Image (cartoon, rainbow, N blue to C red):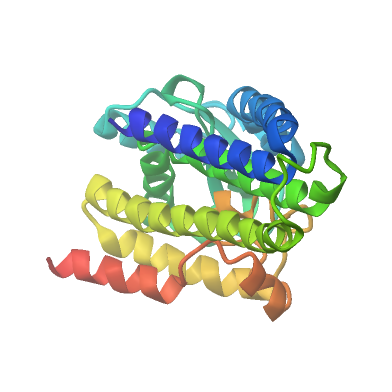
Length: 278
């Protein structure tokens, strides 16, 4: 069911992009938008995981190189009924983590060195359970595709005036200008809404997987505090939504607001407290 929901969202966003291409440049715009969307979705589906791991210089590890981390992940995957994902450590001091991959068999979990140094074993287990919950619900693919289509819509809006198409196919200039302004905002709102709702769902999944909501609650408080104090040099808006805590939190206020794909840590902790007492 989760996989069907993922594919439905991918198709819906792609159709939105194609419709926008048609509004910008008629039938030729729809064809161009379809080709762009097909290419970007193909890349996002098959190669986005490798690209993001490479971008953050993630180093693959196994039981021999990170036995404690490996055993935590192995224990939780057995509990969740998931295959063992590939494990990576990112050589960054900002404590953070993310999951990536298109399905259960191609999933990966990456954590930073800073996270392993800062958190105790129970807190690490809470974070890993959060990432495995993302994997279980195909959130990595959803997040990647929504970010890809949102970026494509923004690009198409920026260059919409240069696309071909006869006057008969194009909307009047006022409508076109309005679409060029509104559509990127709509796409960004869709991306943020999807990302925020999925973070809450993954937090809940982690709490149920471990049976201890307070473990993730404590971890989130620590991660958020450190994210305000230090930055991750390689972090960018295109991949920030993947992390358990927004790695851009330490940037200036306008940057945090502009790319706020995460709900507030306070709200997430409050929900975990409710689960603990439920």
